[in-house]
Image 1 (cartoon, helix red, strand yellow):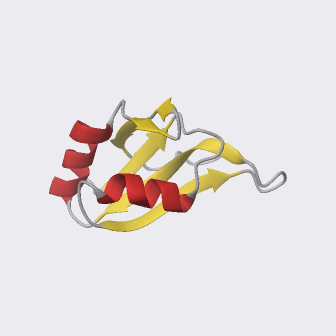
Image 2 (cartoon, one colour; image 1 turned 90 degrees about the horizontal axis):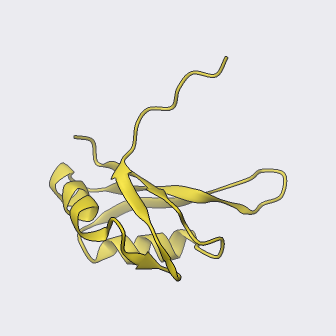
Length: 86
Protein backbone atom coordinates (compact mmCIF):
# COMPACT_ATOMS: atom_id res chain seq x y z
CA UNK A 1 0.00 0.00 0.00
CA UNK A 2 1.18 3.51 -0.78
CA UNK A 3 1.03 6.31 1.77
CA UNK A 4 -0.67 8.75 -0.62
CA UNK A 5 -4.44 9.05 -0.23
CA UNK A 6 -7.23 10.32 -2.45
CA UNK A 7 -9.86 12.38 -0.63
CA UNK A 8 -13.14 12.84 -2.49
CA UNK A 9 -16.49 14.56 -1.81
CA UNK A 10 -14.80 17.61 -0.29
CA UNK A 11 -16.85 20.66 0.56
CA UNK A 12 -16.13 23.55 -1.82
CA UNK A 13 -14.87 25.54 1.18
CA UNK A 14 -12.25 22.96 2.23
CA UNK A 15 -8.64 24.22 2.20
CA UNK A 16 -5.22 22.57 2.33
CA UNK A 17 -5.04 23.46 6.04
CA UNK A 18 -8.45 21.88 6.71
CA UNK A 19 -7.23 18.64 5.12
CA UNK A 20 -3.96 18.67 7.07
CA UNK A 21 -5.74 19.25 10.41
CA UNK A 22 -8.37 16.59 9.65
CA UNK A 23 -5.74 13.92 8.89
CA UNK A 24 -3.26 14.93 11.61
CA UNK A 25 -5.52 13.22 14.16
CA UNK A 26 -4.47 9.79 12.85
CA UNK A 27 -0.79 10.40 12.05
CA UNK A 28 1.87 12.65 10.59
CA UNK A 29 0.76 14.52 7.48
CA UNK A 30 3.60 15.03 4.97
CA UNK A 31 1.46 17.04 2.52
CA UNK A 32 -2.18 17.95 1.95
CA UNK A 33 -3.48 19.52 -1.25
CA UNK A 34 -6.97 20.43 -2.42
CA UNK A 35 -7.06 20.34 -6.22
CA UNK A 36 -8.33 23.56 -7.78
CA UNK A 37 -9.38 24.46 -11.31
CA UNK A 38 -6.57 26.52 -12.81
CA UNK A 39 -8.99 28.80 -14.71
CA UNK A 40 -11.52 29.58 -11.97
CA UNK A 41 -9.28 28.88 -8.93
CA UNK A 42 -12.23 27.00 -7.41
CA UNK A 43 -11.93 23.64 -5.66
CA UNK A 44 -12.67 20.60 -7.82
CA UNK A 45 -14.06 18.79 -4.75
CA UNK A 46 -11.16 16.42 -4.19
CA UNK A 47 -7.60 16.41 -2.95
CA UNK A 48 -4.62 14.31 -1.94
CA UNK A 49 -2.97 13.70 1.43
CA UNK A 50 0.39 12.05 1.95
CA UNK A 51 0.97 10.36 5.30
CA UNK A 52 4.42 9.53 6.71
CA UNK A 53 3.89 5.75 6.65
CA UNK A 54 1.75 3.05 5.09
CA UNK A 55 0.35 2.16 8.52
CA UNK A 56 -0.80 5.75 9.10
CA UNK A 57 -2.34 5.86 5.63
CA UNK A 58 -4.30 2.68 6.35
CA UNK A 59 -5.39 4.07 9.73
CA UNK A 60 -6.61 7.23 7.98
CA UNK A 61 -8.70 5.16 5.55
CA UNK A 62 -10.13 3.05 8.38
CA UNK A 63 -10.95 5.98 10.70
CA UNK A 64 -11.73 8.91 8.39
CA UNK A 65 -13.59 7.41 5.42
CA UNK A 66 -17.18 8.68 5.71
CA UNK A 67 -16.35 11.18 8.46
CA UNK A 68 -17.52 14.78 8.30
CA UNK A 69 -15.16 17.54 7.12
CA UNK A 70 -16.66 21.04 6.73
CA UNK A 71 -20.17 19.59 6.77
CA UNK A 72 -19.68 16.80 4.18
CA UNK A 73 -18.78 13.14 4.61
CA UNK A 74 -15.50 12.54 2.75
CA UNK A 75 -14.40 9.48 0.79
CA UNK A 76 -10.85 8.39 1.67
CA UNK A 77 -9.03 5.76 -0.38
CA UNK A 78 -5.60 4.83 -1.64
CA UNK A 79 -4.50 7.15 -4.45
CA UNK A 80 -4.00 5.47 -7.82
CA UNK A 81 -1.48 6.68 -10.41
CA UNK A 82 -2.91 9.14 -12.92
CA UNK A 83 -3.88 7.53 -16.20
CA UNK A 84 -1.88 8.76 -19.19
CA UNK A 85 -3.68 11.45 -21.16
CA UNK A 86 -4.58 10.62 -24.73
